Amino acid sequence: MATGKEDLLQSLIEAYLMEKGTREFYAQAASKCSAPDARRTFEELSAWEEKHMDFIQYLYQAVTEDRDTEGFEDFRDKSGAHVAEGGIPVKDLAARLEKVSINDDMEAITMALGIEGKAYAMYWKLSKSAPDSNARVVFRSMMEQEINHISYLKEMMTRISESA
Image 1 (cartoon, rainbow, N blue to C red):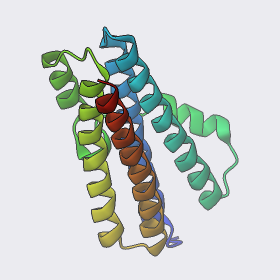
Image 2: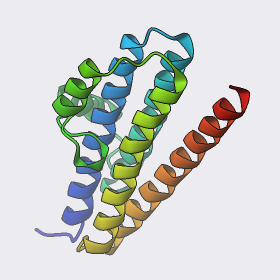
Image 3: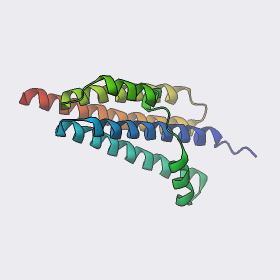
Image 4: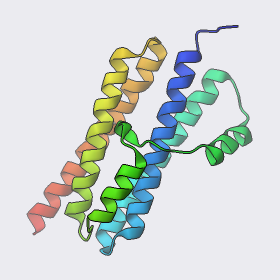
């Protein structure tokens, strides 16, 4: 029987998988960085995405009234994350990573700003077009988190420019 939650639940699952894809990409990028500062930047970005995943998991379990964390963890482990934030295929990001030498913070931040900017644009679009009002609220919340990331990255970029 339809409950009206299906659109919201599917939206949460899709957002979760995109956050997972982005987290995995940032972790992979960190492992390929030769400069310690750039590696730390990507490690921090990966941790942010992990927090987003936790937030979405909390929302999903609250909406479904499902407190089975173990079942969600099983989903988490088995689900593939083929698309990152902004709808960018993870394989495309990985290919781009192979072509770019990330050896300083500025390169890492520039790449991250592109990803986070696309994520914001995607969540904005979804917040306008989602058929479920609760899903729109979730997407607006994700937009705010992306704005915080973009602001942080811009501040970091300014600090690096000023110290150079």
